[in-house]
Length: 449
Image 1 (spheres, helix red, strand yellow):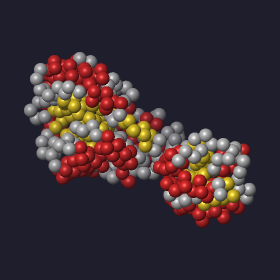
Image 2: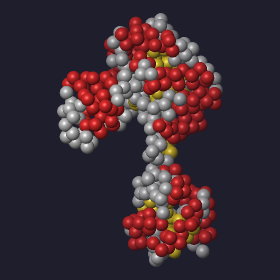
Image 3: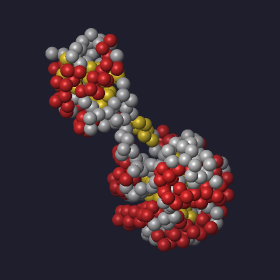
Image 4: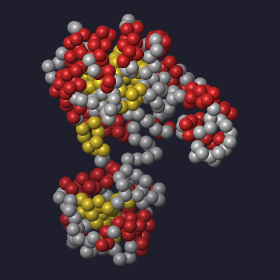
């Protein structure tokens, strides 16, 4: 059960030494209760108090790490129901599933490992490969897992089989070092699966059917009693409504009711006959609490949509994706090239830069620090005003790089042109278009006129 700030304060040394970075022990305790800092920042907490506080300050949803090395990813450790309350922390892993007897297993593994797209300056990738046991001998499954590992070295794996012997054979063949996620322990096989997971120190999925949360609670207690703590939950719902209800209830039970037995990340198997139907299921899973999402279709249109959605949802709402404020060169600008200015919101930057670059127009692009806000939002918040524009121009050195004094400001802030002229009296302030798509035509027909 979570402790209040005052309860935590009573367990602290109460010296107000400030070494934790807070002015008083009470301030530190209040922040610790909000999960806004870590207990380790207090150098003088006693062992007894640490034991009590560690248990109380444990995250309501336990962190599970899947894979090892550079591509390993963590899921869980979330503290809020809704993104706007604070932020979502660990984005769900997108995993593509392939049958162990598939003729193209190695090819699929390599494609999953190599898939990437770029969006607003960030490279987005898939997170793992699920190898599903097609049945048969344990040795055949182990060989398939080995082939997947060889084709996609370092790519996190999900091992899917109801046969504990097959999972054990794959892990004993070398996969254990990569800490794959084992899917899944059920009421029928949990003893054997728990033994394998414990033996190889790998995270384990526990699965029930049809969103049976009572059954999931019982199974969690049994597996944890067997010594396995790194769990992921699969409620096994088969309809969109059932998946939504199960995921929401599990999140609420963990966060609001302190149900430690259910305080684990979730896996969603979003398989569907078509990629369009699969996209619908996976979209809901991204938005509603899945930690691992297993897909059957390697369809670029679906994957890009999911990666974009995931990026949007798992961006800190209090800290938008932003570019470094500085002078950017689009193409190879010269002393005669136009000078544009915009804000450092990534989407704004890439919209402008993309249109200019696509038109083949070498341009100087000044990016002002607006705390990552768009042009209109930055202007409304006082983060993109005449003073900020002037400061950006003067601090960039652009005056020494061009042979003209013409600056194009965004059309959305046309009303600032007079104020900018007062701040930059040597410059001619020109009002550009409101939409980035119109910038190439503006430069060709207005700027040089």
